[in-house]
Structures are given as structure tokens and as C-alpha cells.
Amino acid sequence: MKASVQRVADALEQLGINVEITEFAESTRTAEEAAAAVNSTLGQIVKSLVFLAGEQPVLALVSGTNRVDTEKLAAVAGGTIKRANADIVREATGFSIGGVPPVGHTTPLPTYLDRDLLQYQVVWAAAGTPNAVFPIAPDELQRITNATVVDLAAAS
Ligand code: 5CA
Image 1 (cartoon, rainbow, N blue to C red):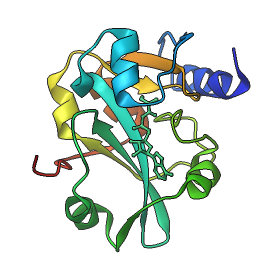
Image 2: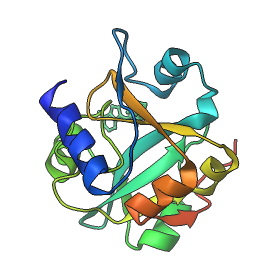
Image 3: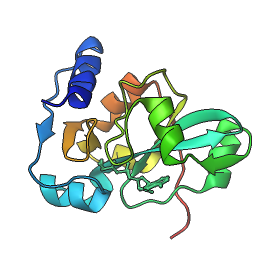
């Protein structure tokens, strides 16, 4: 297991939950690739997206079918919302884009969970690298990330 995947496994264990991380031979870098790898719908893939709310990095956990409406995020996170660049993502989370997990970050980030994820029995999130994911019930994901559940989806 890669060190960055091990960090996610350790974080999940410390949170007291027993989930199985799968490392694939193929890429799960994008939500589409992850859905193909785990044979789920796109909506069941959790995108872990870092934004800057003013200066504060925040994490949005978003269904694979949704784009974030930054005005909706601003309304709950405060400040002007900007997408974090790759360097800020790595600094704030300790992980690189494509493998950013919902837990195990360098420092805890204020976290917002797309309410559309709650319709599924199980969702899949990245586990530290662009080919590792794990399944989790969305209510459990909300609990372990201490996330605020919000409507984040941009009109499609
Ligand atoms: N492993 C997959 C599925 S769990 C994953 O991590 N998906 S993701 O959506 O959370 O991460 C990829 C996202 O990073 C893409 O949606 C894309 O919007 C964003 N991204 C890619 N390149 C950049 C970049 N240069 N700056 C900011 N965000 C980026």
C-alpha cells in the first residue's frame, strides 16, 4: 500500500470505521474513471474539492454528477470562493489532486457535503492516490467528516 493510502487507512481506523480501500491497476483519477472502476453510477462518486473561502481552505464533498455553485458555497462558507490550485490543495490536505480523500488531511478543513449524495446507500471516495477508493454510507461520511449538509449543485 502506498504511504498516502496508508495515511487514509490510518485516519479511517482512528475514526473507528471499518472500510476497505481498493487500489486499482487502472486510474480512478476522475469521477468518471472511478465510477467505471467500481461499477457504480457517476452520482455515487464523491469528488473531494478544495476551495478557498477568502483565505480559508474548505472541502466540498460533491456528487460526481454535480458542479459546485460557488454562490451556494459562499452562502455557507463565507467570503469569496475561489478554486484552490494544485499547490494549495497539496498544502491544505497533504494529497494531490485526483487522490484527495475526505479524511486524513494535514489539518482538518471545514467540510460541506452535497445533499445529493444522501440518496445513495453507498458512495465511493478517493483514498489518497489517483487509483485508490473506498466505499462508505453517505451518512457515515457526513459523520466522520463532521460535514455540514448543503445544497451545492449548480443548475444543470
Ligand atoms: N479520484 C477521483 C474520484 S474519487 C477524484 O479525486 N475526483 S475529484 O473530482 O475529487 O478530483 C479531481 C478534480 O480536481 C476534478 O474535478 C477537477 O475539477 C479538479 N482539478 C483538476 N485539475 C485541477 C487544477 N489544476 N486546479 C484545481 N482543480 C483541479
